[in-house]
Image (cartoon, rainbow, N blue to C red):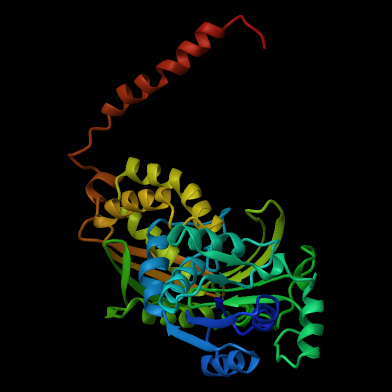
Length: 399
């Protein structure tokens, strides 16, 4: 039996290689996706082989990740529960898709992952597996093995001399890619306790950010960012550069208690510096290019779209349907936005577009000839009609 394991090199998947081999008498093929996590993937290859993997796939998916997953999500202005920009959520369908492709190439009968039985990632991985290959066997070690905590995993790893990065002193879990880094579990599980200041990796504390204001121009074409300060870049390079600029200015930290798909609340801490700037800038260019009713209708769909990404339904027909609608209206979202970055704040201070619907001669408070202010009287009275009728009808009634 062959099993393709989504391998990160962390505690869970390092233990999983040995456990899968012992439990299923199987050949384990490790797959590690380079999504911009900034780790030495050659070291991960050696570690996987040293732990018992028969073969290791390491693939650079950064450009595909940004172009085909992050950018479509940003075009939708997707934010989960008001603050989470879905950095971990959006990475899982790409990893799982490539995992299935490798399983087909290797003629493997099963795929596996290191997600826990309490988290969202198990759902995201497995919904993608089944959407793309309905007959695949899925093995979820956390739902089968005898270990009931990361502490027990650490003991198992030590017993079998499996090198791990998690320790009893620093037991919280992290997940990093080009879009963000997340922190959860361990010492972070008390939602009243402030996270340690030395934990953050992509952003400086706002109070330690430069005292000088930074200005940044982001150019959009049909809803996608294509240039920073007039310099065109590939999707991954643009995001990487923006992460650096926004991170140095303390942009993009979030500390939230979120509702997991499996039904419990969980505290998550996130850093999304470049993504935060892109989300703000995208809304700004939309503000002058989208029709009011189109924008409001799209905004009413944002919570649903964000839930689909968070829950793991990237390859569902409903997400694809929403994406088609969103991408159609993004055809006019072209222009440039100027951002002002200062000590954790990201402000829009300018926006322009060749497709702009904003007309100064209409918006001005000064004299102009296009808009007759007297016309507003009839507009107001017609819209007040139902309010007047309700008041007249209900007069004399209580309750």
